[in-house]
Image (cartoon, rainbow, N blue to C red; front, side, top):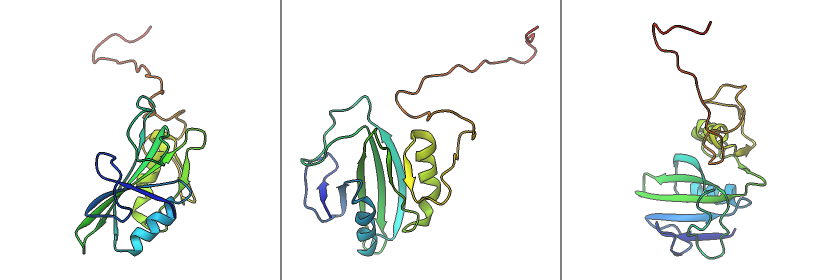
Length: 163
C-alpha cells in the first residue's frame, strides 16, 4: 500500500495517522487504505464528498502525489481513541471512478450518490448509484466547474402569462 500523509496545509508528515492526519491514497489503494484504517480503529465515516479543482490545478499536494482535476475526500473518526483522519484521493478526469466504501461503511451510500449526481464520480460496486438530488433525466453534473449556468424562467404571481 502506497500512502502519502500530510498535515492540514499539505506539508508531508509521517505515514501513520496522527490525531488529525491527512492521508493521500492512490485510486488503486483507496479501498485497501480505508479498510486498513477501519481495522485500526476508525469505526465511523463522518463524511464523504468530492471536489472539482478545475480552476486550481497548481494546488499543494505532497511529493509523489500527482494533482488531478477531481478529488474524493473521506473523513473518518475513531470515537474510542478521539482521533480523526482525512483520506484524499486524486481522481483523474479521464476516468472519474473509485471503489465504493459501502461494504466498509454502509452510511456512505447516500454520500457517494451525491458525489456521483453532482460531480459525475462513479463509485464501482455501489448498490444503487442513481441520482439523489437531480431528476433522473437531468443531463450533466451541476457542481462541475465547467457546467454551463442555465437560465430558469420566472413567472411572477398575477403577471400575464405567455399568449
